[in-house]
Image 1: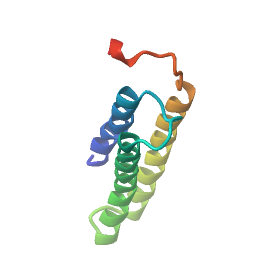
Image 2 (image 1 turned 180 degrees about the vertical axis):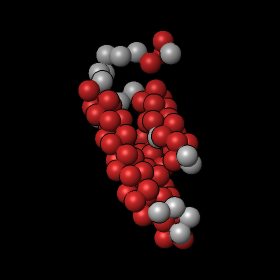
Image 3 (image 1 turned 135 degrees about the horizontal axis):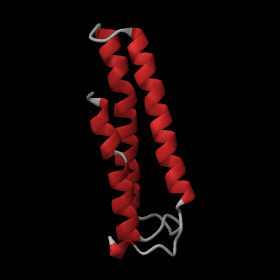
Length: 95
């Protein structure tokens, strides 16, 4: 259940950086780089948490495999969403 927190936190830095910077196509931007770093840290934490819990014996290895595979599916879905809806004409100020 702790992994659900990461599922809700993952898109937040990307949404913030897209709203503040406009797009990822420009030259290196500190806000974009920070948000990519934070997103990567959240994804790695979400995948590593079940592995650490299985290593300590808190959860079973089968549960760890199911949670990790589910996390991969969820994060690939989020990534696919941002690839499909990567429309630069979308105005985020309406949010």
